[in-house]
Length: 362
Image (cartoon, rainbow, N blue to C red):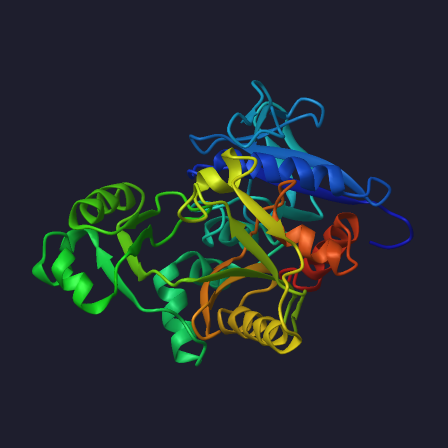
C-alpha cells in the first residue's frame, strides 16, 4: 500500500471440507478485525459443492458467531479466479474488481492443503499464509511428522495406516498395541479441528475409530496417548519467524480430549489460558521448537504449533501444525498475539504485509 491507497482484500471462506462452518465463523471475525481505513473487503464464500460466490458484506454469513449454525447466505454472484488474471471474473457480468491480496480463511482439504494456494500462485495474487509446499506438508500429519523427526524435533510414537491395508495383521489392534501403549488416538491424516478423531482403549473402540477416520481420509495416523499438558504456540513471519509466549488448553473432566465438540460446541468445554503458566526456560524451548517446526515445513505467514508437555518428566512432544489457524472469538492464535501486544487489527496488517513480501513474480 502506498500514498494512502486502500488495498482490496478478498476473504475466502467456507469450502468443501468438514470444517466449513468453522471457516465461516473465523472469516467473520477476520472481516470485523480489518481496518477499513486501510482495506476494502471482497467477501467470497465457497459452498459445500465448491462453487465460489461474491457477497455483499452485510449479507454474507448467517449465524456467523455460531460454529454449529454458521452458513453462507443464499444468493451471491457466482465468480471465479482465472490463472494469469488478478481480477475476479463474475459469471453474469464479466471481469470485476482487481484483487490486491487474498486472505484464505479456509480449514482442511481444499483450502489448507495447498490446492487453493496453487490456484492463487497461478493467478499471481499475493495471499496470506503458507505456500503450496508448506500447506501440503502441514496438512498431512504423517508427512509433517516424518519431516520433524528427520529435523531432530521430538514427536510422540505413531503408526500410519492406508485404507487399502485395512484388515492386514500388521495393523490389527494386537499389532498396534505391541508398538503403542493404549489408549491411542485414531485420526484422519489430513483434517483439522479434531474432525474424525477418536480415542480407543479397546479393540472394539479401535475398529469403530478406524471406520470414522477412514470415512474422511484414505490415510490414518494412530498415535500413542501422552499424559501431558496441551500447549499451543503462535508463530508469525516468513523466513525468520517469531513466536508468542505459549498458551494452554485445559479440558474440563467431561471431555476426554480436545474434540470438535469441546472446541466449538460446548462453550465450557475447556479453559483457555492464553499465557500458559510455564517456567521461562520451558516456554522458550516451546517457542524455539515451534519456529523450527515452521521453518522445517517451509511455512510462511502464520501457524499455530501444538505440543504435549508430559506430566511425568516434563518432556516436550510436537503434536501438529495448523497453517491456517482458527480466527474465531475463542481461537488461541489471535488471542496469543493479542496478549503479546499485537491486537487483531495489527496482526491482520502484519499478515497482509507478509503476504505482499512474497507475492508471485509477474
